[in-house]
Length: 194
Image (cartoon, rainbow, N blue to C red; front, side, top):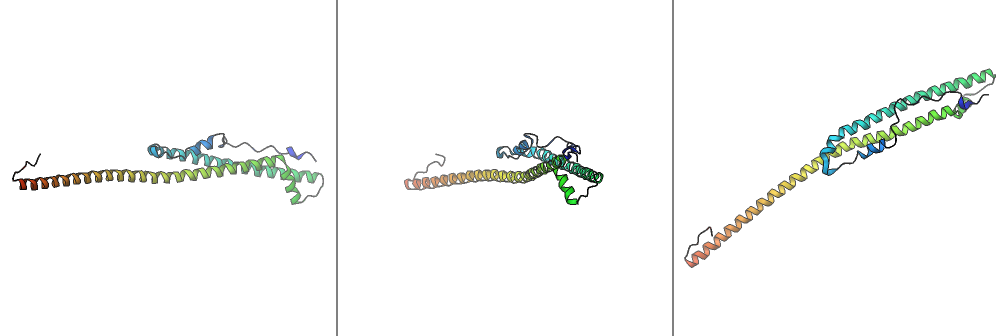
């Protein structure tokens, strides 16, 4: 029999450039960071970042699906080739032996590896997509928290000022009462503005 390591042409390349190109996923991961001091920018950038991750995920799923179709083609071609060669050689083969021979083929292994790699890529992008979805919820919570903190600070500042005014008014009233008592003892009335 001929060398089966080169019976079938390798599966076609994916339609899109690999999403896992150096830095691409890592750059998207960096986009998960939330700068609490710059929530405005985080809120504005969130939909765009989520879109890019979701689009990359969709492209990876499509590439994986194409790779699965290519894998099925490679498998079918190898199966047909092995059966044809067995018929020509008048050799009886079992389903198990055909499957074992297919698994030894280079094109089968390459197509299978491609699916495994794309499955990992899809899983990573799915996790990243979910993380960006969670980021949107966290941004809402942080915005509400910052608004509450600012309201508390404004309310606390207003309350402090009101207490200070009341304390000053009470002190002025006490001073007036004391002046009135002194004046009554001395028989001399002092001006209230002094």
